[in-house]
Length: 270
Image 1 (tube, rainbow, N blue to C red):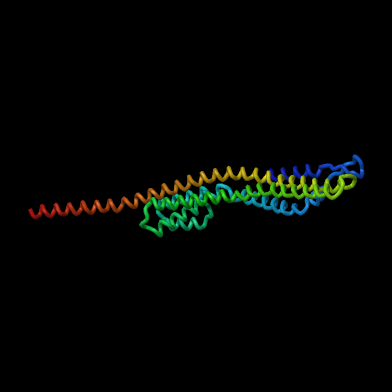
Image 2 (cartoon, rainbow, N blue to C red):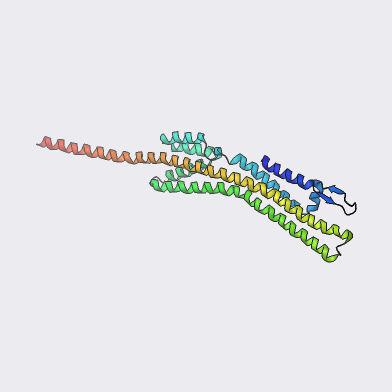
């Protein structure tokens, strides 16, 4: 966030120290203040200001939310590991409702489907997990896309200001002769065109820089989310194998007992 403000303040300071030659004072130059820059930018300063405020808000929000603790924390993974080994699925569902993480949403969706459909195979449960995992990953990618949109929209708003300013400049050329004090109107239109372009770039460039940073972070978090979901599915697979092997072993025990009893009965008859 500090990088965004540094770039923005540096750009404003460069614009603020711009010198314009006054036709009434010869070679004397005057410094443009920030208020004068805002006044010369025109009505497009308001959408540019709104975009800058939204960009700062999104950057702060992403710093607080796009982190490992909000995707797959060690605390949840340890609790899930212990509860799955104990086959306490209801307790794990309660933990999922208390912790707002991507992996907890995936686990909750998986366990809800498994408990409501006890006859479902493990492959069907895995498909539910993969679908929810893809949805959570797309949510993370889509969340930071708003910052990229601002990075694309702000220069376009600046370009709109450039077009409007140039239209004003050419209207001055068409309506008046390009001499004397009429140069002031021409310079005003060109100044508005350049200031809106600079304002749009001052917002768009930092927004795209932070978008690139958050995109790399999201990709790392998605990889960790996939690893966490794979770990939980491996634990559930082990529990499924144990649950399916118990009845078969019990059936084999009962059949062996039945055959032994038949052998004993035949020996007695003999």
